[in-house]
Amino acid sequence: MSDFHLVDPQGWEYDLQSVYSAYMGYFQLHGVLWYDRTWGQFFETFEQFLGFSWPVITVTDIWTGRAHIATRMTSIGAFLKMIKTRFGETLPQVDNMLIIQPFETSQRHLRTVTDWSTYKKLHSTLPAVALAAFKARVRSGDPKAIRELWAKKDKAFLAIDFEWSERNDNSCLEWGYAAVRCGHLDTAGAWPPVPDVNYRKGHYIISEYVDKVFNKLSPTVPWQYAFGESQVIPKTKLPRIIQSVLSSLVSPDSETIANNLVLVGHGIQADLQRLEAMKISKSSHHRSSRYTSTLRTRISY
Image (tube, rainbow, N blue to C red; front, side, top):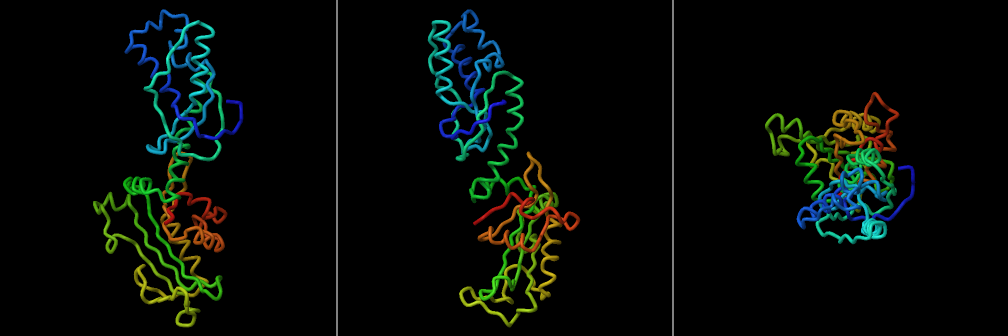
């Protein structure tokens, strides 16, 4: 896998292992004595099939979310042409190969698989490929991905909302949140959760501005909020409160495990920028780890 080129994923539609499997099925169905043919060496094992040197990329299927090592029809055609040129026999293009529709649209790394060791190394990256695509689907608001995320019952969901002054966008007037710890509630037998009973909620009004600063375009009504009982606090304490809420919910992720916290909000990118400006990190014990680098799985509506 030493080559390093970028290619458009469009057209990379055939799972490589399924190409080999499809031909073995074809031989069985039609009584082709492949083991007696001079070209039969390429089908004795999957590793020998890989010896042709297959150009591949890793992509996920847009419908199933599964990651695949995919090749193109032109490469399959090149393989069939090699059989005809070297051995004088024609193999058909079979129709029972696994066809995928790549979810990814940006360019992908082109690799060349020549043996089992190379294939195995590339195959070991598929969980990370699938996770990256899943996170992208969640960020884009894909309903199927969000339902799947919720149904796993192993994440914490956190909905947040800021109200900022229209006259001074550095002045936060209110902040509210609602959180649900799915794994905890499922273990406790409280699934599906009831928002009024099972959600953790909080609403904080900044004392310096309450009853003094009012928005005109989006009027603020600080005493009629949906995030639970209101508390009046000094503006200097808001970052500490937000930090404590996040620290109680978030856990770090890895290359193959999705984050524990799913952030939900309206216009979430603006909220992320505000949190970054407040120097909010994932843990009060790890100030150098910024919020945006740890909460990579998030939902935007």
